[in-house]
Length: 133
Image (tube, rainbow, N blue to C red; front, side, top):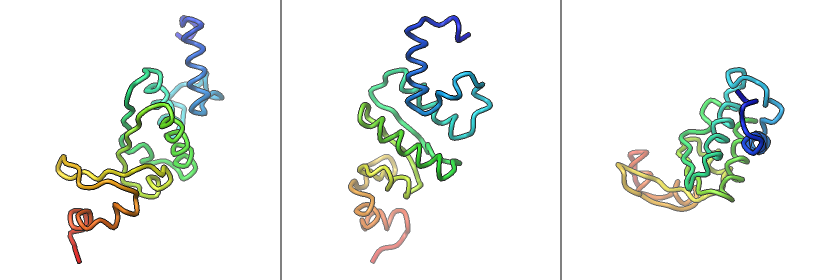
């Protein structure tokens, strides 16, 4: 199937595979890739569509520490070119991203700020931990 693509499309596929670190696996079946590599392949397919916003839901769930670190670097590089929204419960990963954090509760914005500001916010503590001072 890859042989039937135009040279322009092939060039874009190779560029994206290189961008997400999968160029060495260009001839591999997607099913043979690791879980992390499949995540990066999915991200490359999103980028190929030139979206205004990239929404990533739990992008590091089930990844190794090494894959998580690589995914953080990939997302940071994407954020330079796209609006990226990450839904994630892994706070260390969120800290690695270094981006503003928005906390939602029942469909409404509860608070926004740095990870440390959000973690110290009394509303967040009350809603998510069920306690207050």
